[in-house]
Length: 377
Image (tube, rainbow, N blue to C red; front, side):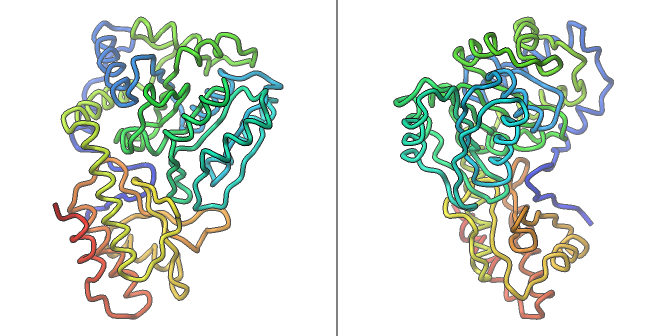
């Protein structure tokens, strides 16, 4: 039975990417590999929509978030954070760990922060050196209006705008340069269709100035070293070579499809998943639903572990559950990365059948029908 991965990370790896990674390993200081890095650097700039550097780290997504904090800020800096879920919460934890002073805005899980509230807090903290945002909160299936919020920040403050784009870059609309973002990170196992292990950080000229003035100690995650290497299509340390080779392939796939078409596909697939879940009585968790991860309340009579195990063992569909206080209360279905219409229909049909079997109710195909209508041209 084929396993269909609908978790918010890792996401499915295309066969052509996997085959490319299985080829003979090049040496990372060779001219051949520098040429690969040159293509990858250009491809990453296209995905982030920036003409500036996009640095590469061998780490998890949290490593990239930590790198952004320690390179752009110094101990004692006041930095505004937005906590609307598990990953927004992480910004505050990182700032506290390294001696910065977080000013935390909290919003209920499933709601999105608005620009007015961010502006008002900045007016009360005119010494804020940065604002840390989560573009797409996978723990709640919620996306924020990053463009409007970034505009409000720029109008009000000189604070750096730094973004966790881990589950949005390469899948949802994000225009780094046009929207005036200063730092944005993502990870390989999301919209870029690779296994975990690589992360990326786009930087503005303003952010680079902050990198050069930060006094926070750093070594392996030092953007100053990475920037020097980036200019020569090189890396300061031994990179995840096979993943970079695979990235060269996956970026080519995104280019072939067209970035805006990739955004549209993700939005259409999320719409179909939402329609399918709603058709069988599942209420959406988020008030501002994500185009890459859908969260919905489980029916009261549905036991999460029984449902999850049946969905995996009988239908080969793997989804995620809730996090924190919502463990066992919501499900999360990701459509990040390498999925087509038939994958989406298979996931929705599998969910509907597993729900019916666990709750011992008929499954007339209402979810599948609703998803098919949503996918229709």
